[in-house]
Length: 195
Ligand code: GTP
Ligand code: MG
Image (cartoon, protein in one colour):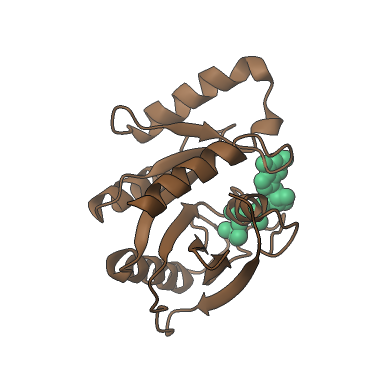
């Protein structure tokens, strides 16, 4: 995808009305700090349009990025951030649940997992939850640059086994530093947009 323009168009909190439009939406879920906002910047060729932080819990709203007036990349708030209060966690759950349930234009949900670590209970729950909502999650293993090449295959296997993925599920390694995986992710997105 050649990026002609990209902008943050809508920000949704717990009381916001979800946007009503006719373009495909592609959502990115994953625990806090896994690299969702960095991936979205990488896809859009923007350094910091989506705000990122080394502190987990940066993105707390659902942010819709309009790319080329043809597709929305949807940045979801991260889960599993221990310092957040119980009531905040519940709000987060409701916000994402409402979105997965009611978006009419959502075509695909990507679930991001840090390639270095075994998926957590929360990751597994999120995977199952996305499936339960009728979407087959596409897995992105983030922070590929943090691993030696020789370790990659073993870690991809660990991610697949940890999530008990549906057989045949793709796991795409990605690095926001080197942009490895970017073209493959766009190809998948374009395939989903055509559906
Ligand atoms: P929340 O908004 O808190 O849910 O986090 P997020 O998933 O949006 O993560 P974000 O993109 O803000 O990245 C978190 C931290 O990880 C930042 O310090 C990023 O620079 C770093 N990071 C993200 N992707 C990569 C990557 O591919 N490689 C490396 N080395 N660092 C990364
Ligand atoms: Mg973020």
